[in-house]
Image (cartoon, rainbow, N blue to C red; front, side, top):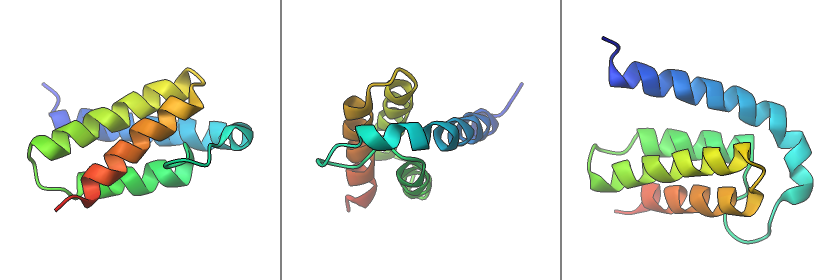
Length: 94
């Protein structure tokens, strides 16, 4: 049985590869509100979320990252940025 953290790590690694491959094409779609849907922002946000203590806020932030990834893969750049922004905001909550 695979450990859930390994699945998360594999998914994050795969997502990072996709983000870095798609980011140049996405640059023209970047919105001025919230966090842009870019490889750099995904990396920063995922690192910040991963560093959070395990609690309901972290789990909600992880879900927002997942929703952002799904939106990005479906070329929904605005939704991607919104979800990524929510995850980043949650990671900064005290």
